[in-house]
Amino acid sequence: MVYANFGKRLLAYLIDVLVLNVLCGMIIIFYGYYVYMAVFWVAGALYYILFEGSSWHATLGKRAMGISVVDGSGNGIEYGTAAVRYLGRILSSLTVFVGYLMAAFTENSQALHDKVAGTFVIDGSPVPGRYQTGAGQAGNFSGGQSGRQIVGISGEFAGRAASVSPAGTMIGRDPVACQIALSASAPGVSRHHCQVDYNPQTRMFILNDLGSTYGTYLLNGTRLKSGQPAALKSGERFCVGSKANIFEVR
Image (cartoon, rainbow, N blue to C red; front, side):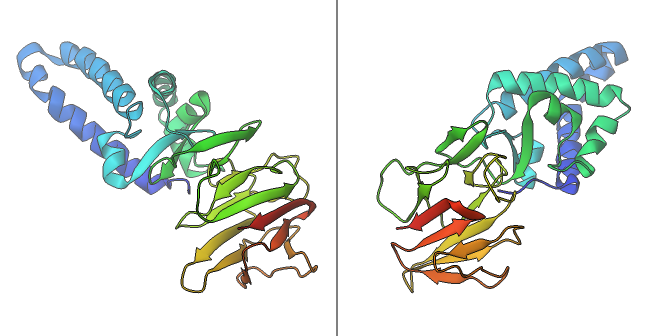
């Protein structure tokens, strides 16, 4: 998963404003501006809370742009969080929309209301089957099901398994973008450290370093260069940052 960029968020916002104005537009003709504003705010609250807390986790505008709202573990938010996020939107508006503009330059593309609610806006939909691996960390839990897996051998992920998705499974410290997210204290692990894919034609796993600081290593000590992936057979192992974090593909 990746964070939605400011352009997509802005277009989604404009679509949502248009939808709300169309829904409430006739009121101003019959009841005047003040009644229109009152209804607009109530309708807006219901609109954002009900849509973002639903199984879509996205308003009509976000849905049109292919983005959605998740919590710090990458799960879709519930109605309570959606309500807090909406209250945060009021703060974003009261700052002369600076709160919205924050999404253009903050590290995780968070607006002020995202920081208030602890949410993120991502491309695509929330990944199902995520679980907590520690303080705010998450991964795709395989639950012992069949399929290609990454198994933790040493480190805080030891004894856990994550499935290798068709889009690849990323390992790092970013709890939203990474399917195996380790804590900030994990030795030598970058935010977006490495990714594992599976090639069904060759029946090989493909390990790719993502420009990490401390490197991704094969057990023979070979350090992978970013952009030069290594092919692994089932049962082979690799290190993320150091031998404190060893994983095996199966």
